Image (cartoon, rainbow, N blue to C red; front, side):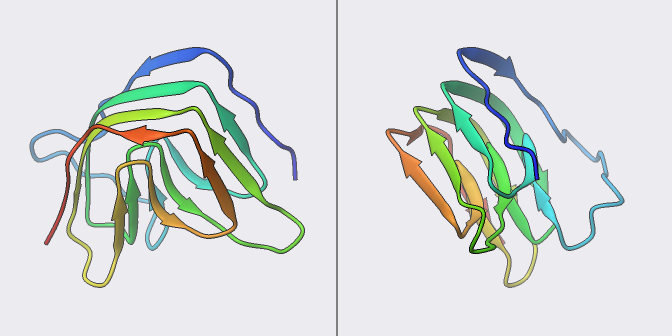
Length: 116
């Protein structure tokens, strides 16, 4: 598995608006990075809207997966994303929808998170 490193990068994101639909990710994460495993994400700011009925929804990362040999790091990141999740028994978060096997350091969420 290859690690990724993003530094000093500003990105405006808008995933889903109005009645837009996304298919092909059933049961997976939704976010700028749908799923991460062994990733390093640093110095990243995201803003926009994420709205989904998928299982794990986050402003930056939908789902951080866990395998003992791979640990992810999210550091010095800021999310100003409106997160709307509607999956029954799902996970939603301003930075990461489902977080396992990840260290989150010096990060902040300024956006709202709602689920139904």
